[in-house]
Length: 139
Image (cartoon, rainbow, N blue to C red; front, side, top):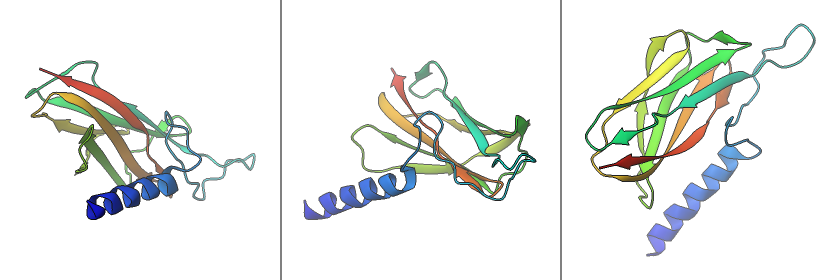
């Protein structure tokens, strides 16, 4: 019991540190050296797309659309998807596949119905973004 509580506390603390000050729909962005001409920092944008309907044992495609100043980022340092079922302490992480034009994808079929959470971890242009969404897998 103590071990589970310690793991849960470490996970919660790492999420707080990793996500502090972020907007859940936008994720967290950490600025690199992307200064625009007017002195403003250009931030990467990551749109996490989740299918409207997901069924057990049917392949679903998740997408992270990555842009900088409205232009697609073709090469990111790293793009992975982390997902887990509600109430499950075990998280799965899989590297995304580039679909071109700033779109990075994960195709996955779920074995069990239920509520899930997915986070896309995107490192590009010296920045990091972690948008998160919840979804349901139905029978």
